Length: 164
Length: 164
Image (cartoon, rainbow over all chains, first blue to last red; front, side, top):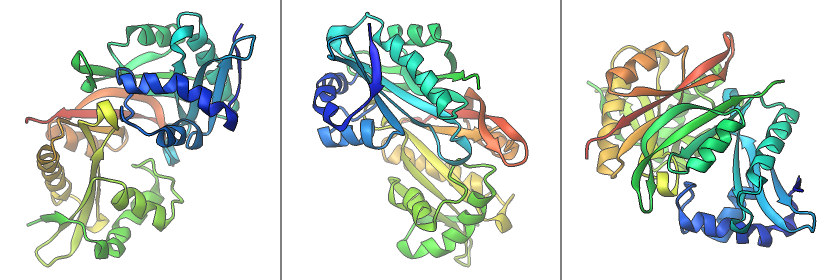
């Protein structure tokens, strides 16, 4: 059973152990692969409207996600999320649980839609998962992601309207 | 004859006279419509990799644009630009001149492609102009822009590969 709760400042060191290897691998997110821990904390926890942690029954953190407006001003009714799951906790439904939670949270905060700006096409598991959760590929960005082994690969813009 | 040159710090007050009414109108860009002058200067001049001004033969500023990486890390080979033209200088080819200049500048800086993240669908003049300059609509974001009079309208993601 995965529980999702608001991120606390003290969660960062544990979250960083999940986040760092994913950023360093550089094959799914467009953060600078050599990003400092401090800049990562800024981007994941300080700048977003909210950050959450997913944990198991024993309180072990399994994943984390952030939620923020995708644009300011006249685009601020569309939110954006990023999700990361601990490598040791993959394929256990943690990403699904966070995706569902984030949609509820986004609705609660008044967002009308959710947009993923750069879903790497080679990350087929994520693409399929977001599709299962109702997201559509609304755009394809040709060669927009430099994959460390596959080279320049397409990235998708994925979008879901949220019922109000 | 429009000349385009690097933006100087002293250009800001003139540029702000062009930029402010466009931002306050809130019908083309997703900046907060009540953005402060200081925050606008940050966004237009300080954060981007480069900012330029377009001027006429008498040195009067007609428009301005910024150029920056659209994403960090593995997406940093795709750039993003924003363009603004003085209301009094519309339909004189200033936006076209800036668009062409920005592509040359982007190539010079090593970018492989240019992406516009949120082209408001009701801004038909801009959509047509970018298409004339080789940009394709690669995505449609349903209702992603809250237009002050038209309500929620679609926005386009537009993209162009830059020859190296």
